[in-house]
Image (cartoon, rainbow, N blue to C red; front, side, top):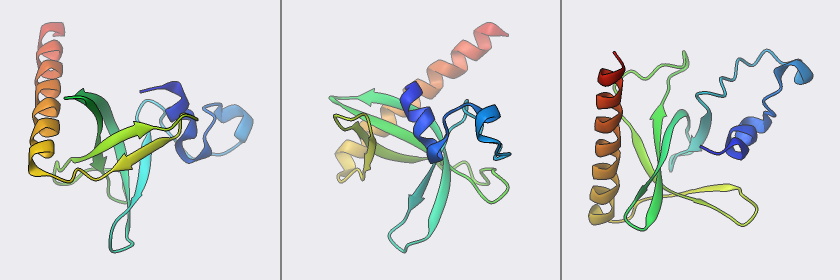
Length: 120
């Protein structure tokens, strides 16, 4: 994930000493807030941004009020940055595109699991 995206999260500059806030933003685990179709808001941890096919996708882990994920569900969205570097998320519209993105995400997670096992 780019440093620019980390810094854009909820206006955080990453310099906790200068802002004086005790927000407990963990820049190693940035979050985004999604507004769903029914206008509810869900805070999600950004797991990763990854390529699949000719596009990029983002994997988000929905969090409850305590900052935990209760059911292991992961949201996948198409990810883009505009010319100014601002991130944009789009719904994945087709089953075919979703299969491409979810397969790539699964492969990425499997590769990370193998790397973790090799390091232990």
